[in-house]
Image (tube, rainbow, N blue to C red; front, side, top):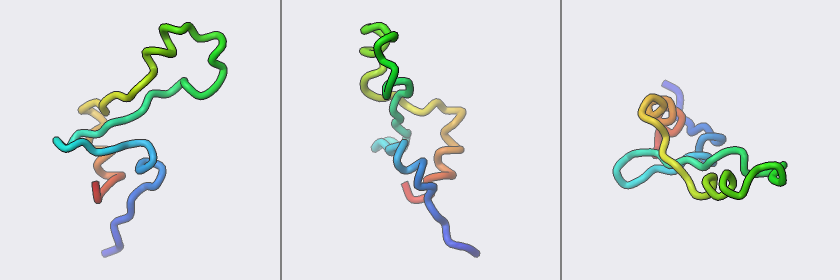
Length: 65
């Protein structure tokens, strides 16, 4: 049986919480910010949780988390 390897791209994008859920960052916050409203940019701050439908996919990419 081959080694279980972590998808490094996923490891950089997701963090595990103490309860076993996954945190993620928001997209659309890197460039071309002048045309985006202050409200929109403010609401993109911080992170969010991965939805339940994607939880198994993230778990498969991060076997050691």
